[in-house]
Image (cartoon, rainbow, N blue to C red; front, side):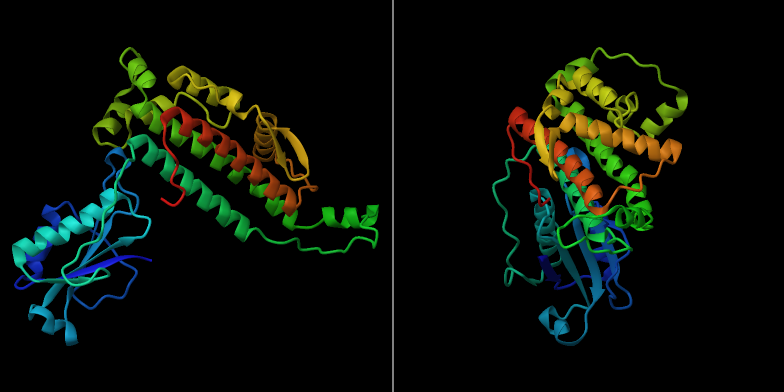
Length: 341
C-alpha cells in the first residue's frame, strides 16, 4: 500500500525532466522493479529534523501503448511513497508533481483521480517525536523479525503424561544444537537495547532545552581526524557526545541520560513486570541479560539450558524496558509515538 501518482507532461524530454528532478534535490538511485529500457530512477529524503520516514521515489520512464495517448509526450514522471510516509514526504510528492506540471503542462493520473494530488493532514509532529518514533519503529520491526525467524528446537521430545520432564529428557534437550543458536542471538538482543538508547539519546540531546544549555558550556578535546569527520558530515556533535558513554552498560547509560537530560533511566526501569512466568524488576532483568551477553562474548560461555521460549523472554524484557522509557518520554515531551512510521 502507498501512493502512486504519474504526471504525463504535455512537452518534456528525458533530459529536461532529469535536470528538473536534480534541481529539486532528487538523486539517482537503483530500483528493484524492472522498468522499461531508458528509465531513470531518482529518490529524495530529508534528513533534517527527521522530516522523512520513507522519502519520495520518482522515475522518468518512456511511454508506450495506451499511455502515449494521454498527452502524446514520450516521457512521464511516476512518483510514489509508502503508506507510512511522513507529512513532509507526502508534501514533497505533491510538490514535485505540481511544479513539474506548471513547467511542462500535462495531466496527472493516479490513486486520487485525474489532476488530483495526495491529501495532506494536520501535522503536529516535532523533531523529537519523529526521531524517537522512527527509532522505536525500527527496533520493533527487528525484534519481530527475530521472533519470526527464530528456529524451533532440533530435538523434540514430549514430556510424560503428567507434564513432568525426567532427567534423561532434560539431558538430551541440553544437547540440542539450536540452543547454541539461541545463545548466539543474545548479543543481538542486547545490541537492540544499546542501539535504541544510544540513538534516542542523540535525538534528545539535539533538541532538549536542558541538553542545549549544557552544550553551550561543554568542553571536550577533539583530534583533527574527528574535526574532518564533522566537516564531511560523517559525524555529528551528538555522535561525538554519545561516544563518551557505553550504552551496553546500565551505569554508563544512566550517567549519559542524567548528565545531559536530567533523566534517571534506572528509576524508569525500576518497575516490576511479568516476563514469562516470573515477575521481577526490569532494571535487574535487563542487567542480568547484559551480563549474560558479556559471558557469551568474552568468555564463550554457552548456556545449554537456554530454550527458544527463554530467548523470547529475553526479547520481551528488552521490549518492556524500551516501552517503559517510551511512556516516560511521551509524558515528558507531550507526544504519542507513531508505531507505524
